[in-house]
Amino acid sequence: MTWTDVVDGYCERTDASYWSEPLNAVSNLSFMVVAVITWRMARAANDKAALLLALSAGSIGIGSYLFHTHATRWALQADVWPIRGFVLLFIGFAVVRFFNAPRWAGLATAAAFVMATAATIALGGAVGVTLNGSIGYAPIPAAMVLMAALVARRDQRAAIGMLLGAATFILSLALRTVDRELCASLPLGTHFGWHLLNGVVIGTMIAVFIRGGRVVVNDLGRSSLPIATDR
Image (cartoon, rainbow, N blue to C red; front, top):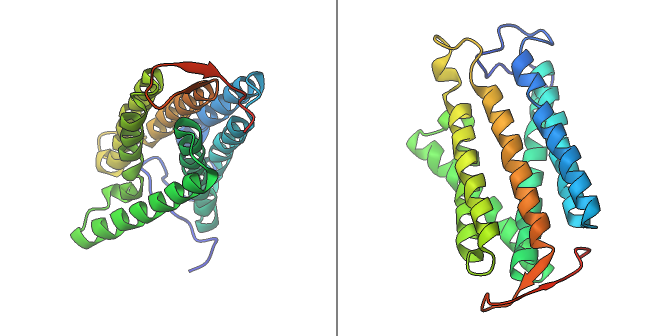
């Protein structure tokens, strides 16, 4: 087993050629579009953390493109690590921003999420549930819903945005999960929908994050004051 071994995990791929997954490859433009839009939003808000999130969103598109064209083990790593990086960055930054928590709390929450994901994968493996390799993403919408619930009293608009993001992510996760199951009836598969909808999710979450940096709500959720977004 080598880093150049071909990984064939999707309906659309029929051979090892570069353009065997055109829809899966090109649909990564959604991440690049979101990266550009949120980068401009972050610059306008002078929000350095959001700028980093926008760059991270762009890296997801690049990594996924590499995987769906080269389809090798090394390209798979280029695909999965930017996604993990974005999720952990967002969790850490969001805890600090929405709850006025210290940075160590953001790091601790991100570490706890890593452990929760590992436990979910282990549990899924123990009971034979892999969801076509999607089981590791299952904690993400759960974390989004939990954060929305905790933030709701302080910022209802942010909570609604997170819930919409969670609902969209669940739909995108379903498309990723059923891709192999529908090959006979849908030769092109559904994985490209995972890319397109995840672009919407990431754009929504970064927009919610940027808006959260423009106001601070007190512990009782009764007042708000403008603050600088450069943290």
